[in-house]
Length: 77
Image (spheres, rainbow, N blue to C red):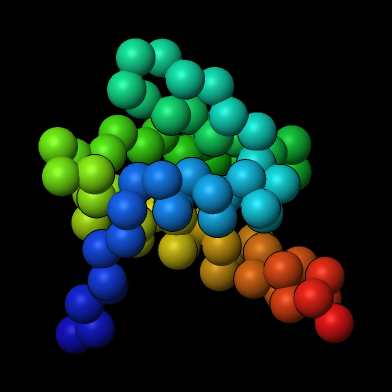
């Protein structure tokens, strides 16, 4: 099975913002939402600054489900 690369919490946040997600912060929880997306993404980076593996998987699943990766591609072209 493919193992997702762990990226930093800051990098995950930057990528979500680039995809048009809005955020609010409550303590060390970063809660992301976007109008046309049902799910809410709750990130809480680990002590080493990396995003938790299940959170990276959740973000990836949402990006693929809503075809958000195409938005980024189309914006670059």
